[in-house]
Image (cartoon, rainbow, N blue to C red; front, side, top):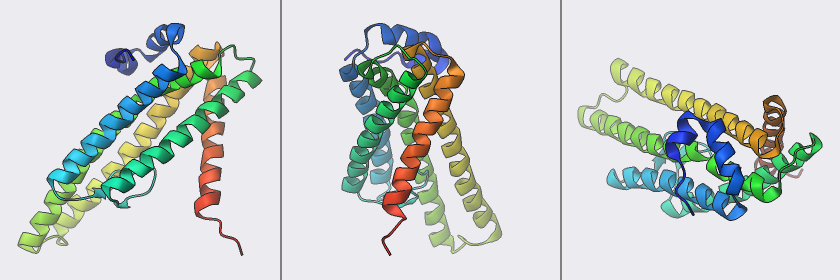
Length: 214
């Protein structure tokens, strides 16, 4: 697999996707997806291992909480399945709008569109480190819940939520651009496709995790 054009994906996504779609395959797309996911999870694990913590401050989509290293890699497996389902839904949606791309091409470009995952993992590691240092300061000085530290902790949580929202919007935009380029359809159509695909995924996850038989 050729190393992705990181700068192009970050600064000029449309033109970069136009170059990628010319010779991409589903194998290259999956390679890019695993690369970005590996970087994100590895950086998070590096930070969390350094502080002896497994606390995810920035939500990866599973909710904030304590997880084991094995659990995090299991989550990667779940994300992989969700990625394939999302790519298939986006492909089918593009066909409804008379898109010209193939499923392999769709997977190919969407794999590269997952670059925010790597950056989010790195930032999550920093958030984890900061949170750990705040806890240590509170334990040593018994000041974790005084006015200053409580406000700092609240700001950290707020910042993590805001960053998660920003990254969700970012990856939605990249997916929309990628689908638009791969299938030669208008950007607003690809945006609608991505939103609907995500809504379906959310509905499936909601049904699996929250709806229980009576």
